[in-house]
Length: 432
Image 1 (cartoon, rainbow, N blue to C red):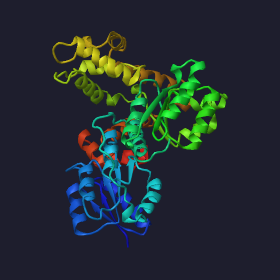
Image 2: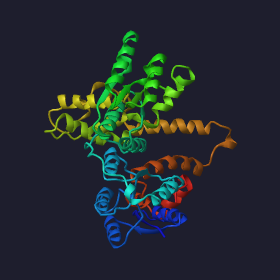
Image 3: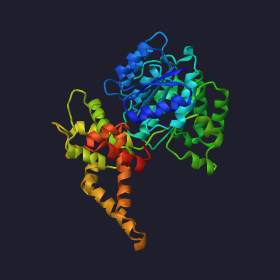
């Protein structure tokens, strides 16, 4: 019988994964810590390993490195709720076979695990080139998904489409993919920089230069239909890998006849969707700190609570690109720490003053939400428990994500009874 080692400290998830393993006719062996998993791997051989990165005693990546150092290492699937790009790339570099983000879809994991158990040991992925450290930062769920796809794109030379608002980091992500995919020449063509009479010649030139290498087409949605046809023909010949970015709604353009449907599917073998900064304000502390350190490596410039509140209350129309500029502004005007609101760019300060504080914004949103709920006929007004559940559901979902999908840790942090929390998670979020 095949044997699968599950290294996961969350009991409920380990039990669910054990059930999946048994359905595949394999024997599950559970370890609740990294050291415990390594000790079990030393005592017996395993046909596959399911490994959480966020273990209580050590990083799962350290466990992965140790497992891979053996003479016949088992194939490993990484499971994490903390999917930074560095983690995803490092997992691929160390030879992880796949990378899954919490909350897990067990129906998706089962066929992947079945394939893993059928994989000959000689076909375990080889280690890739070492990634650049601290390339991109973000713990938000949508960024974790993007990091996972970026890591996949680094491991296979297929076309990749990167979409998102201007300034979110599409070009940076594409350059990471190109750099991590091996020693290939990278040629960049910016579609919206050339007038119509010159664009065709420049694209042809870039296609020629990128043969045997990688062509990055920025803002591919700005290509004219004839140039889209040229790109389609070039991709069918397969003489270069093509990466493309777009801040334009390509699917809408297809319906409008402004973008070729066949080109869209040629480009989007892998699709990296990078979220706007306003949708992941939880990433702002780490992002701002990293950008301040990059702009002033010899200075200690911590952000005050008031300054951080102002950053989180701002809508960031320019996304990460605007945050880079804002932190450069701080370095230029802040002579002593900590960074105060008056050290931030005027647009951010003005927005913070208008909205006062996030608590006030929350109160306004709550009043508007209650107005909408309570203006219906009296007989249809929801009871208090129903109203509370609607507020509690997104609150618990966000809190759980911040604690790596681990209810035990969340209950301890909230000083909440674990049984009560698990009941609420089951009733409101459908999580066991």
